[in-house]
Image 1 (cartoon, rainbow, N blue to C red):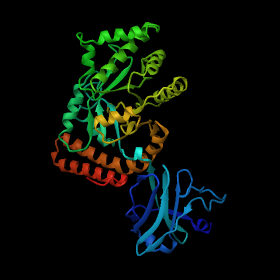
Image 2 (image 1 turned 180 degrees about the vertical axis):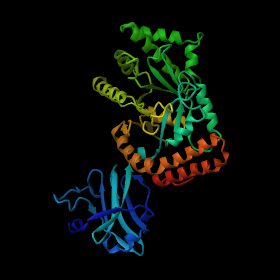
Image 3 (image 1 turned 90 degrees about the vertical axis):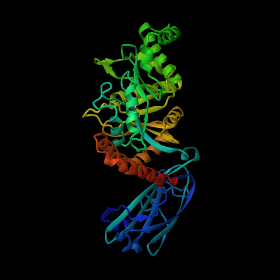
Amino acid sequence: MERLQRIKTSHRLSGAFANMPARVLPADSKLHFELEILSPEIMRNIDEIDVKYVRDDHRMDDGSIARLTPDRELLWQKVPCSVSGNILTFDLDFNGEHEHWIGISVLEGDKEYREDFYFYTLEKDLLKYNVFKGSVHTHSTGSDGNYPPEFVPAYMRQAGYDFTALTDHACYEPSLQAIEAMKKFDSGLEVYHGEEAENYGFGITHILSLGSSASISKWEYDPESDFSARVEKIQNELKDYPEHDAKYTAQFEAITSKIRELGGLSVYCHPYWKQNARYAATELMTDIILRRGNFDALELGNFTVPRMALLNAKVMEAIREYLFRKPFIGSSDWHGRPSQKATVDYTIIFADSAEFPDFAEAVRAERCVAVGGQNDEFPFGPYRLVKYAQFLMEHYFKQIHDPLCAEQGELILKALNGDMSVLPAIAELKEKIAEKQAEFFGRGTK
C-alpha cells in the first residue's frame, strides 16, 4: 500500500525490455523470463523494480483469486524477480486458455515508470492455426465502385488485409483483372475470384460468390442454362408459401447450389438492405432462407449499424427457435466512396494460410470472427474466438500487422501509378510482415 501512496504520476514506457517471449503460447506454459533492460529509467531505479501479474479472470498463476483485500493492495500477484547486470529474471506459469498481463515498473521519487505486456495462451486445437484478416465484398468500376479493378486490392492491403475479393455486381471478369494485376507484386496479399450475384432481374437478395471457377451471373442469365429448371424444382418444394417469396427464395438457392458446384463459397450478404425505403426482401423470405440454410455464411457489418443490428436480432431469434447455426463473415461492401471506411468491417480467420481453400475451410468450420461497425470495431462469433480476436485486434493487428500492411499498400498504389522502383520495398515488407507474425506467434521463420 505504501508504494501506491507514493505514486503521483505514471509514465508509460515502450521498448524498455528485449528478449520478450512470443505473445501467443500453448496453454499451461511454464515461462522463464530473462529480459534485457534497455530503459535508463529502469536501470537507475533498479532497486525499486516491481513485477506484477494477473490473467483475465483475475487469478494468479496458481489459479488463486487475485482480489484479496478491499484496499486493492493485493490486486495483482507480486512476482519474485532478480537482476544481474542489466538482465531481469523471473518465472511464471501461464495456466489455461486466457489473456495474461505482466506489469514491470520502477519508482523514482513519486514518479512511476512502467511497461505492460500482454500474452495469450491457447489450447492445441486453436494454437496450431495462423491468423489472418480480410474483406471479401468490394466493388470497382466494373460495376458501381469508384476505382478500377486493379486498384481495389491495393486499397484493401492499405486497410490492413491479408486477403480480399473483388465482387462486382453480376460481373466476374473484374476479379480476374484484380488477380492478374496483383501478380506483378510480391506482396503476400491473397486475392480471390469473386462476384455479387442477385435474383433474376430484381436484386431482391444478393449473394457473394467467392472462389468460384466461373461466373455465376453468366450461367444465371444464359437462356441455355439449367437455372430456370433448378428454380422450378426448388419452388415446388416451397408451394405452401406465397408465390413471391417462394420464387425468389428458389432463385437464391439455385444460385448458391451452383456456387457450390463451381468450388465456391456462398455468402448471404446484407439481408436487411433497403431499396426505395423498404427492405428489398420480405421478412418472410429472409426467414425462409435462414431456416433452410442453403448457403455457407452470413455477412455482418456492411458499413451500416442498422443492418447489423437487425441481422443480429434475427439470428438470436433463430437460434432460440430452431438452433440456427451459420458462420458470420464481416465485410465492408467497399465502393471507394469518400465517406466509407475500409478498415472497420472485416473477417478474422484461424487457418493454415490465407489462400482461398484454407479461407473457405475456416469459414465452413466456423473458425472465423466477423468484425463490424461504423466508427469502432465490434467482433461477432463464437465466444472463445471473439475473446481471442479481441486480444489480436488490440495487440497484434493494430500495433504490428496493420501499419506494415498500410505501408505496403501505399507502395503498391505507387507502383500501379507507374513508379516501379518500389517493387523491392514491397517484397521486403512482405518478409517483414512474415517475420513479425512469426515473432508474435512464436513460430520461427522459414
